[in-house]
Image (cartoon, rainbow, N blue to C red; front, side):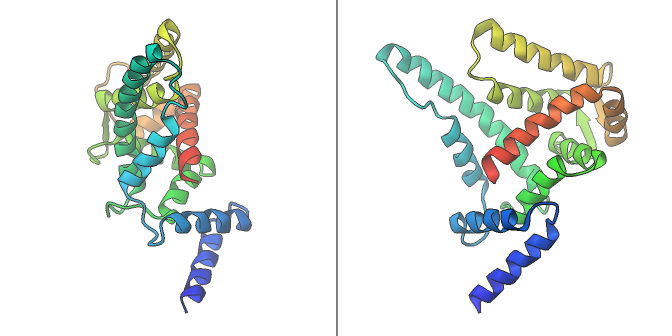
Length: 212
């Protein structure tokens, strides 16, 4: 009976996510359920995946050890900030856990969804208070966290230059506003398509790399 239920569930997933090859969906589903037999991923689980990936591969000498530890602590701070937002965005039913369906819905919205679906998902990520508004500070904080995670291996001025470029994108999006609605967000996306392509690419890297 249990095996039958599992097969039925997998076939339902295949139909639901028919934008992907059926065998890929089955493989992803089986892998997820092999790690989470109850079908539930907690925020702590997602956090462990990210932190494990970003841990330094090797600490070579005593001279570099202290610096590596400092980098790890700082990087983990940005990771946790990002994960809190990412988890809350994927957990649309607010159950304090996410399922395989939740994850694939998020990834499919970003990779296969229409322009409006992509924008809605990204807007929801930055809408921390879930009140239909994004403040400039919330957007800047979230975007800064993602940028720091992706480019943490850059050194000195190169890293600072990268971060400054990202903050310029934020300024271009908000201009003189302190908060924006989804309608504003959609309108700005039309006028700043290149900036929004960069924002979308950050999410695609993160969601796909660590959850499937």
